[in-house]
Each structure stands twice: as C-alpha cells, then as structure tokens.
Length: 370
Image (cartoon, rainbow, N blue to C red; front, top):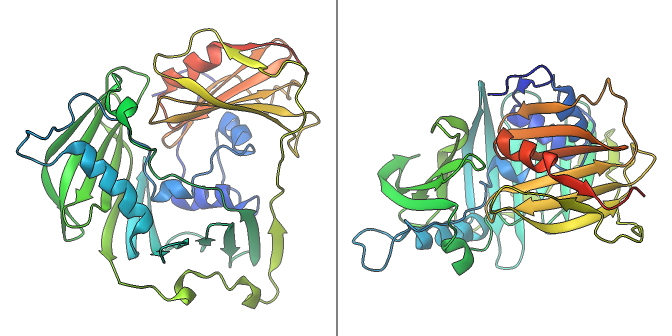
C-alpha cells in the first residue's frame, strides 16, 4: 500500500493497542520508526477502537420514509445509542492485516454511569477497566497497574442534518445477515474519493447493537474488522464484573499518566494553518502543550470530515533524523506521514488513507515558531 523507502507496512495487534493505551510498560513493538515516534504522542488512543467503530457520516443514498426497508439513518442512530446504553457481555475478535486477537468485554450502564471491562484472551494478559472518570490498566505479567483519566468517548459522532447531507459519503442498507446468532441489517458507508475509508456495519434487528464492523480501502478490501463471536444482554451486571479492584494486587507497581495541560500560547493564537486541505476536512481544535519527552511544547490540531478524525502534531525543535525519518508509515488501519517544515517537524496521523495524511502534511503552514 505504501511503496517508498521510508514507508513501512507494519501491523499491530489488539494486545499492542492495549499497550499503547495503558502506558509505557509492555509498550508495543513496532518496526516502523515513524509510527513509533507518533506512538509517544497522545494520538493512538484506541482503547475504545477495539469495540468503538469509526464515526459515521451519511450521504444522499440513505433510506427515506417511503422506502419499504429500514431507514439507514435510523439504524445508525440506534446503533450509537445501543453501544453506550445496553448491558452486554461477550467475546469478539479484532482482525488487522494478519493479526487475529480475541477479547472479552463486559459493558454496564446503570442509567447514569457507563462502565466497561476488557480482557485479552491471547498474547500477554491485560485487563482494562473504564468508568466515567478513570481508566485502569492491569498487567499481570509485569505486575503493573497504570491509571489515567477517562476521556469522554463518543463511539459515533452526533448524526445531524449536516452529516446526513454530506456529499463525501453515500450510505445504504445492503440486505440482511446473521452474526453471533443474531439477525442483522448490513449498512454500507462508501466514500466518494480517495481521502476516506469505507465502512460496513452489521446492526442488530432486535436491539440495534453493533455485531460486526469492517473498515474498507478504496478497492473494497478489508483493512480491519471487529466481530462478536458470542454476546448476551443481561438485565443487570454486578459491580464486581466491571470494577478493577486493583488494590488487591499485592506487590504490583503503580503508575499514573501525567495530566498534560495546555500552556500559554505565543502571541499568535492560531499558530498552525493549512494551505489546501482535502475537501471536506475542517479544523475542530488546536492546542499547545508540553510533552514529557521534549524540551519544547507541541502544537496539536484535530481535523475531521464528520466521520474520520486526523491529528496534526508540530514539534518546534527538530528531532534526531535517525529516529524520525520523513515519509509515510502504517500501523494497521492507522497511517502517518512526517515532513520537515522550516525548523519544525510535522507528523499527521489518523485512521484514514495515506493520501489523506500526506495531503494534510503537505498543506501545513506555521504563523511563527515559539
């Protein structure tokens, strides 16, 4: 997929994804130096991506009230709600390139609080517990507990009229299927250009639960997928099933990830600009933060097309060339592209095609160096 010297076609397993989320202990072993550098930044935060599929935009081919079949927009609205509000307990496989990982998940919602536990069933044992305030990662192998603040997660973005009328995706219901013993509708999201991935979702007929998702490249080939092999929906889930109880792990080392707060920006409030973004992508936030591994702060810009999100990082001191090669790299569905800009180093990363991260990186402009 990526064919030049500095590019590395490298995949990652679900266990590596958990390592990336939970901290430096047992960090993923990545052959791609460029992606390894990006992994130090708070960008591959994919605990939720094990189950949380990418957000949805809806195009002009979605169903209407006059259609005999189900309405595509209503199916996705229902799926977004079900992933957050249902009690469920099950096993799913996460397939990326040649890696197949198996996870056990328990998700509980008591009407106010959402809590979740995930356990890897192959590879190094890891347990991840999440509530509205805290993520607790337990590593039995290295006897470590890593704590970090829980960030709000929207498994799917809000679907409104602006997204429904988006010209960048077409959205259709494509028949019926069966997953993990449950009857489903199959929903297709297709991009209109090379700057977006395609998606296919299997949505439960009875409860709108997501039972399977597939991420597709421009040729319709699977890049990544998540599929339940078994799942149940109990009326209630005991607290003990979703509580970490980390205090009982005698002899474990405890680590807490630092809370990186934005610092006062230079006079130029809007430090990062873009000369020509891929059509449909817009900036939603820009921050200026200190990073533990750097002497100077880093600008972080988030872009979105309403479905996919892309992070742009600007390092204002030039990194060592040997550890930060320019060009493209890949880690599963995640693509990254890095380039030098004056005395700065630009890295763009996201679950989007390589053409997207390269186009965004090439369009970065800076108001000034801090």
